[in-house]
Image (tube, rainbow, N blue to C red; front, side):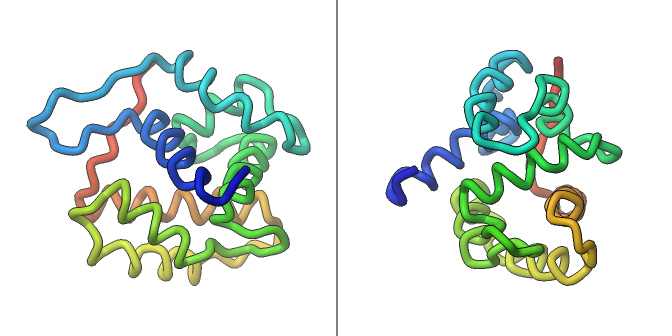
Length: 154
């Protein structure tokens, strides 16, 4: 993926996966779960193990007790977007912050603390487990701080 396009592609994928609206008063964007799966599926083609549909659905729904293959798909996507560089067990704080600030511009103060705290809390030596654990930590912290992250509806 060309560096100039990775951030906009990631924003599109994550925005669709979250089905997020910028403001609770605005009309909410909606896509079906199937549409989001179709959008994300191509990112799994180069992943090992290659994700099945159920793994993509679990990742989109942010299933806490996800299958190992789902966790590996999450890690593979994070690696593709350079948010969790190859061989690392932590998120790249600068790139993750850049993405979060783009998606949640009104939360710029809280984002660095969330990223650092979740990176520091996770101690797994397995890249798939670490990717999943950091992601779940960040999701929980973001919801606690009032980020508008709607639940995915089927």
